[in-house]
Amino acid sequence: MTEDKQTFLDKKLRPLPRWIFMSRWLQAPLYIGLIVAQGVYVWQFWLELAHLISMMSEKNMTETALMLIVLGLIDVVMISNLLVMVIVGGWETFVSRLELENHPDQPEWLSHVNAGVLKVKLATAIIGISSIHLLKTFINASSHDEKTLLWQTVIHMTFVFSALAIAYTEKLVASAHQKH
Image (cartoon, rainbow, N blue to C red; front, top):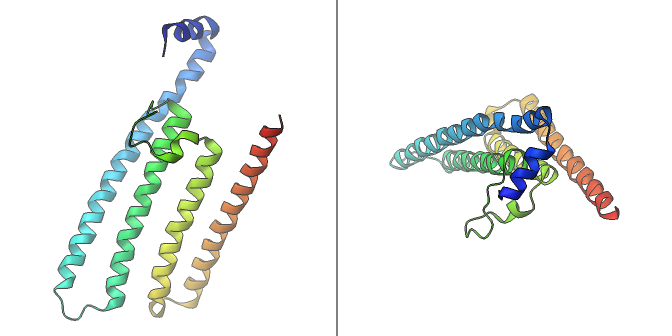
């Protein structure tokens, strides 16, 4: 931040608004906690991968068992991707700028992230994760009762309709802002 901007903020903001504005930094430990949680998911991924490799030596490993383990790995990766979106997008939107402009590794979506875009991205990521869980259930359907299959499908469809509603609402909000 340039000295002129800082001087402006110091003069412009009275003490209470300054404290309210600074309170956004209370979210920092939450994002650090999510980074730790992502580390746990990395550990979980390696445990699952080691399990997959050890199972490959068994002659009686079925294609279904292999597929379920691989879907578990994909699930861990998708949840980790969701964590990255929340950590990076949330920090950029609600705490402070990351100042990644012109950085070669800056995610494409980060340049136009806002609370609405973040909500839509999170909703679609949740649908992806739910899809993996539902696929795992359907692959192993014989070990689940019909009630479980039905409820998992209903919950998944609820996620889909919720994401559509969020996306439609964000589209309406964006078009209303363009008119002003």
